[in-house]
Length: 138
Image (cartoon, rainbow, N blue to C red; front, side):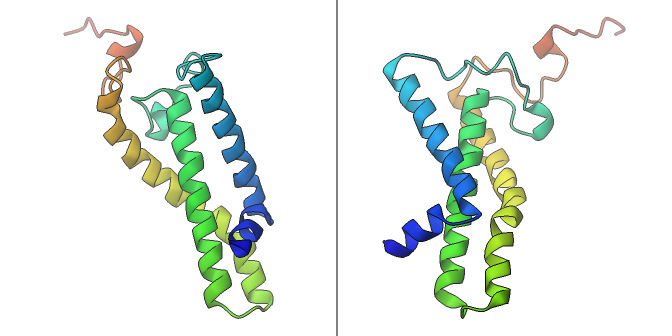
């Protein structure tokens, strides 16, 4: 438990831990009724990132959680399996950054699966119809 706490609060994973705390606080505010899960939908469009079809808060929360779990898990594995040396320290610093593209890809897969739970959100494949752009040339 002490190693997990050390990894989660150590550099550079502390950045993802902080983001995860912010996400958890947001969802506590949603649960308490002070805001809604769709409160960021007007501000951002994640379709270009492959995460359309669910509220932005859900996509960003999923990305944050996946990145945190992969980062903490990778650094824990590194701490338990690799001997302490400068190369291990460098790998520990680079691992959370290297995990981000993997977390993004996994989040895209999760979001596609979650899309059917959010029927009010436009389908990511509906490019033009979702914003009222209809091709009248046909």
